[in-house]
Length: 131
Image 1 (cartoon, one colour):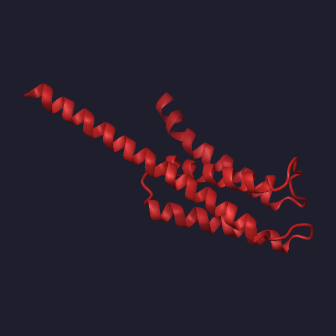
Image 2: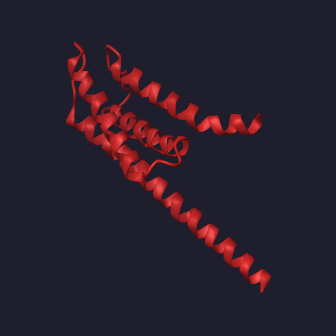
Image 3: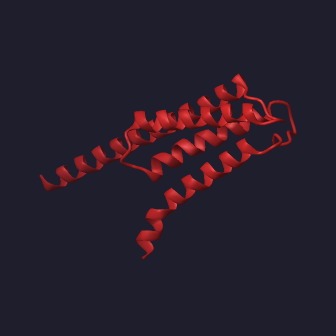
């Protein structure tokens, strides 16, 4: 039972982040800002988190598809805003979305390199102890 819950957590995190991004993107009014261009920080952080959570939620997905779907989703959410009366699509927001996706991809790739190095080191230690 505990294992099933732990396996479900990454998917839950992914869908919660996706829901937050969709709701924030489809609100009638933009999110209030404390400082200029604060929304760019929200776009960047939101899509970086979405990308990493998608990797954790769907571990068998190829990296190229993960990047494609998160980039496509980020662009569609932004374009959808152009159809809302008080919102507009912004190239700056699209760049912030894409930058967030790419930063998430970099974090994933760094994590994968680290995991491979750790696995290689562990298998080397095991082979040395056997000899």
